[in-house]
Image (cartoon, rainbow, N blue to C red; front, side):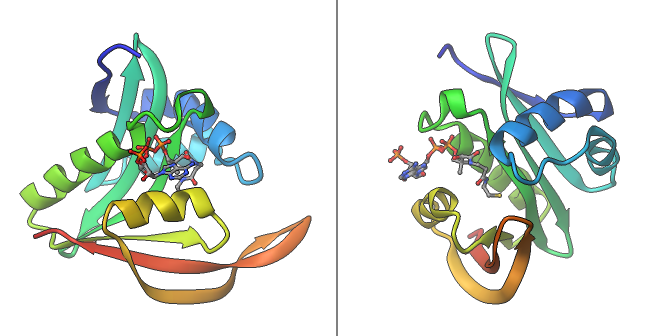
Length: 152
Ligand SMILES: CC(C)(COP(=O)(O)OP(=O)(O)OC[C@H]1O[C@@H](n2cnc3c(N)ncnc32)[C@H](O)[C@@H]1OP(=O)(O)O)[C@@H](O)C(=O)NCCC(=O)NCCS
């Protein structure tokens, strides 16, 4: 993988984001129209990572009220475990600090072990739990864990 490039995601990227989201969350794909509205929101940190001009990952976070809340983080399965998520998170920490946020928060399904390993490696800790938050048509509902990481 050549040196990846990070850029702001805009409404015109909505189809690209939807394709990445569907590959990352096959059971819960977000529609491009919803993603288009999300990236256009004020104070949305929407960043897309490309390698050789190919989109390989993106992160959406709302930076508001002294906090950055990650709404989604998706990495193409073909390039996992190569630091893409870590790069998107580092970029968020920098932007959130600049906006004077003091912590990053997110919700993750309790059974999403890969994401939990990522966030643990990044210094996030559980600060809450929402029982049966993720309802699934073909499986039992999963709790949501609320994770937070300070931005010193
Ligand atoms: C979770 C996800 C974003 C990780 O993306 P990634 O680019 O593969 O992660 P990185 O390569 O940056 O990994 C950083 C660290 O996280 C941990 N980690 C990530 N994936 C891991 C795995 N499969 N097993 C163990 N540890 C893992 C490791 O500590 C890793 O560092 P290391 O490779 O030096 O050991 C990706 O798997 C994904 O898109 N999953 C589906 C969507 C999702 O669950 N999103 C997060 C919830 S919002």
